Image (cartoon, rainbow, N blue to C red; front, side):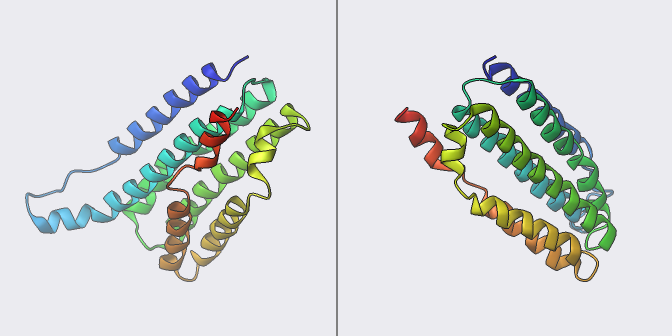
Length: 192
């Protein structure tokens, strides 16, 4: 099958995840700036999570330009990714309610680590399905950015129990490294 239906499903699940996250936002209790400050941690957690989900959606859109055919294994790998993305609203809400606390910061880190692992697995499944001449394999190479990201997530989870602020810095560094989709994919697709 072509990746069109898989992309449509992914679009729908991402839209639902983002909707759930925005529904978790709370209005300030009073019409004062102090009340706005009280909900600022939840807004910050929402912003980070929104950007993370957007990064996955952007990269999914770009990477699937390299996937002309989808098999059952790729479909299941994509569902695996979507499962982990669907848990981000839970960890985001908990972190927003309890900022800089070890448990919520660690769970938030795990909720970011698991989609990264699922993404890595999905790439490997695609490469295996495409065979030796895999465009995905040619594009990824050693994939240093993804490997460093996984290391930063694991470090962040560990740091959550010692210095939650440092864990959040690790998660933020990963986010900033992935903000722009890799333009090499667009060039590969253009030059076919």
